[in-house]
Image (cartoon, rainbow, N blue to C red; front, side):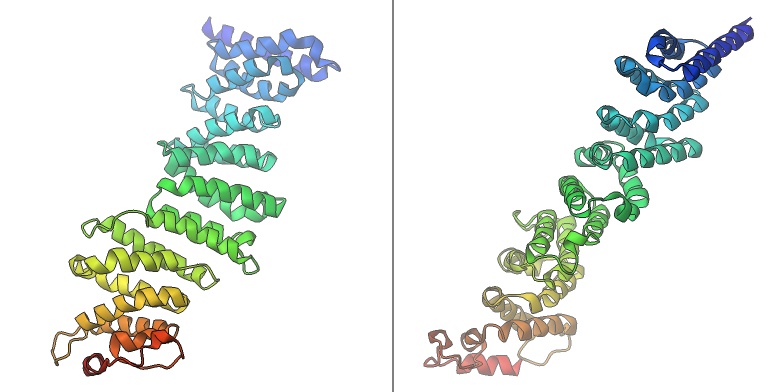
Length: 385
């Protein structure tokens, strides 16, 4: 009896679908569409699967029933039967042609990325991409919102963006300048609480955009540096026992180096090194000291004269520590190499400070040369080292 009832229900839905398909004025058959929507609440699995096909097909013909139809589709993707869920997922892009519903559909599809069924996950990927191609802005906003808010599905969302969306940026981000700015703003909100690898992914994507390309103005590169500065948490007190913070600072410095080369300011990073890291340098774990010195050495060519003036005394201080005056066997040559490289790049930008620091007299004609003072002992000590 149940089988007969199921067959009858499926047959009835087919008839409703055929009648709607052949009708010139479908609006007169609203009752038929309502009957299709009502089938979602029935018992027949096959009827629900058929309803999942028919609801999207005639969705745009009945705007007054749009909310009920959408609600029925959301019910379908919550059902236990895989075939029903997949059919409903495949129908969502048709409903997404109405801007009003795009964000909600994208949000629901994003939540379905956690599916353990490969065939269902593949259907979600295809449906989301169809939706994004139809309406990039309203589709991406809810996805990035999950990343920004740190929801349980954020990792799945990030993987989807990395594998499916980012590689198609040239196709999807049109008009280019407007849409690249739009997605940059989404990324900036999303990276406030991400892992190191996720941050590298997002920064790599931003750097691939034309608004941050070779011909971009200096302000664009400074914008990237400010994002990295926020990730490095330069407003916090340096804690030598917080290995995560040290590693994050090192990683951010390396990410910033190519952007320093483009003209962005390194001042905040260098200032943090002078004021926060150097005073605590002795307490920093040995395995991290060399990495820190390498980042400073690598960034020293891009230091301004003012940066150099602030940083050079700290470099000389560390040189005096790690380049001892007497011959010893345990000199850390890697430390010394990094510090001398840094010293070289900083000293030529601020030559009038070398006399008072280490006795090297370089005449610039400025009072800060301090040529009338005797720094012979400084010179003797430094050259011995």
